Image (cartoon, rainbow over all chains, first blue to last red; front, side, top):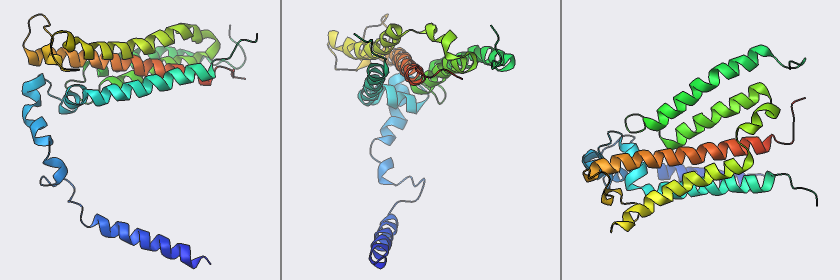
Length: 91
Length: 146
């Protein structure tokens, strides 16, 4: 009875490998991910923010709403740890 | 007081290294505009300098560096600075988090964005540092080294 799960695993793996054949090559400048907003960031991030590091400009300016979400996740995690792990006083 | 389990070398090495690690973290926070780095990474490294002190000296002596109410204040302060910088352009008629609208010292909009990115990174660093320190201190709180 171990044959059927093995077949299912192999079939799924083969499908996944077949799916990767359509992926663009690594570093391909014509890949769809590099054609959407990346040229805009590369061209105009220095003019917009005077920040040579494009990653910082995207993280803290263009996509700062995303960063605000990350900071609030970390904030909630810290508050939860402080609330849950603080020893309670016995009444 | 030196007990049998304390090692002077480890204690002094941690005490020697901690300020340099903290300086490295501050440098990474402040230099995020020009090199890889920024608030998250720098905040982690600043928190690591405190954690190294606790590991070297034992938690009983160092825990008072940052008591619990100060940790809460620190974590909240970072998030609050970020949200405050986000709301600041709305006062002057811009959109949320659109730093260019802030009339900071009558600078041009790109330079205002430059400085606001720096402040946002500092806010992120404060929050990350406080959270990592709080998680570490609360995880070891009930267990002394023995």
